[in-house]
Length: 191
Image 1: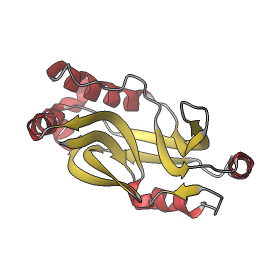
Image 2: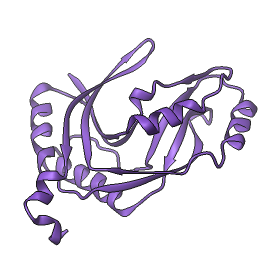
Image 3: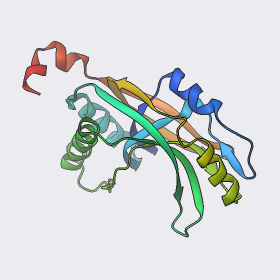
Image 4: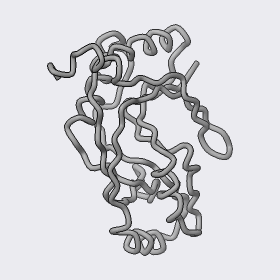
């Protein structure tokens, strides 16, 4: 079984900028910048046969280049209302939601038994918060309130598999899909 998801992955420049503002804090585990991504659709565990079908169907997703903007940091809370993840939020935009929606709709149409997410809040997870000091994390948020305002143009998304380990999740890029062939065929005028 493979645990699959589609995501935008980011340039080294953005990853290093996000990683460079980290600070040692009690029970905060900063994630490796090589794993920074924005999950579009999480498929969960699938068998090899379904993986091959998903991989093939993603080739037919049509999208235009997306300019995303990172604009602030926030804490996401667990279901028990404990600080869980420190994230860099991505400002919502139409092209990003269209891409996420098309992936979700395409895979749902062919595989209605997969339980895909309906709620999409674009972000990059940058740290796991364990039993952290809430005040210390809030001080970090206040200190970095205006330290991120970066735009990035993205022309592809990727299919990843993930495997949990004792030191965190390991991500493997299974395939990448870009908009180049769609636009080179002269279809950009109709989009």
